[in-house]
Image (cartoon, rainbow, N blue to C red; front, side, top):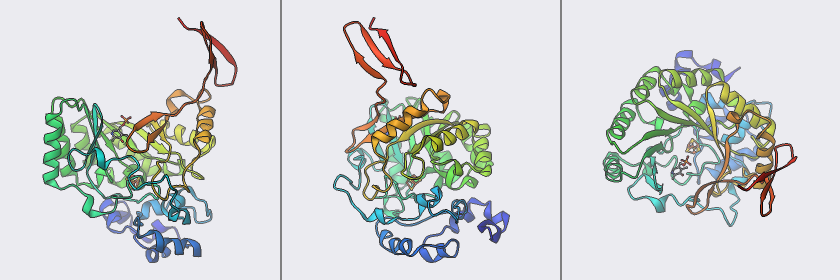
Length: 364
Ligand SMILES: *Cc1c(COP(=O)(O)O)cnc(C)c1O
Ligand code: SF4
């Protein structure tokens, strides 16, 4: 029987019910899908580092007949999570070191990331913020909020605040409205961005009420996190539509390049076309951060570059994201090279086009 059919539609479509009914341990999980013996053993060992958690909604997207199902791989722990490579760290992006106020990472001159909640609907096994996601002690409280708002107000060089986490949409609509209102009252802030995975892991969170809250502060740049075309379900598409129409947001997507999940031109092109047809612009494709236990997910950069070269030129430019790496230790994000420049001489650049043919361009 389909997992969804075990519950009433009114429960299933209620995001608060979905949050309360999240699957948090192996026993509950085994009531829903069967685990292999090795998955079960891994489960016990990984839980110490990074909790398990998924919504029933996201779990129901798993294809039980495919041991390599791309949804399964994102949420069920694998033995590779226990392997720590020498270069992997607990805080690869050095976020804690760039925190002037609890919860605020101010790394770039004109924008700051604001960590608002340790809660996510689903705990993604490749998460960069494993060190704090799922751990209640890491959530900034309301006194920290006031300090952060004061910081944004007194640092007019900050033109963009990014609501992040964890997942900022784990907060109630009332709190989100309060935060957006506070940010909008700061005249030096040019625009607001929200990073959330709810459209993927629990689209029922995107209610008409939430749409109305976001719509009051339009335009908001809303960055989703779809990694695979299977995640763009009918309900996800409907709620993306709600975000655009009622929430008046501009929708972008960031994906992480993940081994065995989306590391092929076919999967990425299907994903990026599906996003574009839902009104979402593919923004970034991230090289997987060097967070401890992520080696099973990481794709060699050279392979990532080749995949990007097989997209660029062949597909609408609107569907092609920038392939970026966030440099270990807090160096920030940079685009990864795609080597279209073959050589230069005194007067010319020599480029290869997307098909590999050579063209010269004068230097002046
Ligand atoms: C990724 C990130 C941003 C946003 O970078 P963009 O390139 O503008 O998307 C801002 N602050 C921090 C700390 C980040 O990690
Ligand atoms: S939604 Fe984002 S922050 Fe939350 S577990 Fe997944 S990757 Fe980490």
